[in-house]
Length: 163
Length: 163
DNA sequence: CTCAATGCAAATCTTTTGCATGCTA
DNA sequence: TAGCATGCAAAAGATTTGCATTGAG
Image (cartoon, rainbow over all chains, first blue to last red; front, top):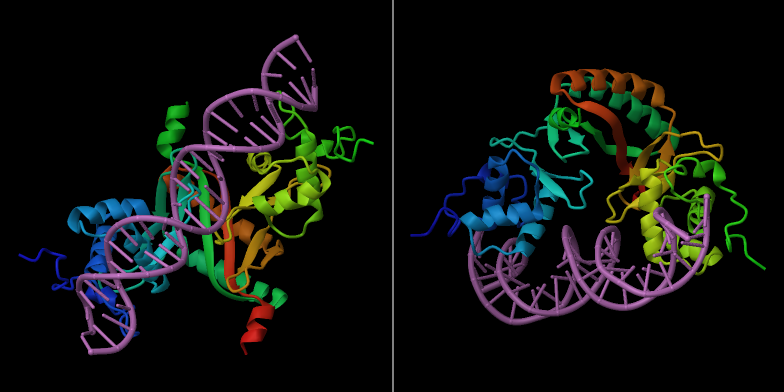
């Protein structure tokens, strides 16, 4: 019996496949499995994390393939590569199952490393960003394509245990 | 003749020394030289960059010492550690010669890697940040201590050469 | 004189690359 | 069937660590 990811029959994540198919790029069992793992996880996973989890459902995968696909899926705008300062890249899905794009920022606890996603200020951010981008691109003749906003501090739990 | 940093006589950067002296920590020739190099540079230097430059004025220094001091000076709030996505950490001085703290954000060219410092939108940013911080810390019970704002895009030169 | 700081060599850890083989479209 | 994708082993880089020695205060 060819397993869930054995021969890449089911194409469960084909919705995301359209983010990259069409350049001769292909949906593969490995990509499907990586996306499935990231869909299920609420955490921000490192390459190693992804490798371990994918390995459970698709044992023949190699770490190199994980790295290559994380890069590929990031370039294809399916994933976002994050840096929370712990010396390894972490990844998150930025598409819903339908293929819609999501956007949020992060609160990073500098004590325990926990990361909280938030999106409630996105509207205000948008206003601020628009103005900033306009001013900055004018002043420095710089075409802004993207931004990074992140807050650092102490989460509830860590603050509690310090008292 | 004992050189400029030969025996750590002159203590030129003693103003910054007070950022960390007092815990039994010391101002050394290596630290003085590293600070001097970062003071002179308008670029954001990697550990290797710092090592090469310091080596010219203080040849006996080792790369390990550079790493250790960059970390130490960052912890002491003399430097800021930056990540512009090129796989190595970069550092910048966040104190003036008087010891005052400076604050700015970065425009990062994703084509050539150039980094532009800016601080002119700090006012608007400050407003946005204040509101966001207030709302977020309340909602998530998270004590915000710091933030990171960075813009990515294409600088003048790179945009020009693409046309 | 004490203990923080340093230098060197070796170790670690994450990420990348070369190459032969497998598999999608 | 063509060429993208994969796996393995090895390489590459950045950063860290152990340990004996040096030097700031």
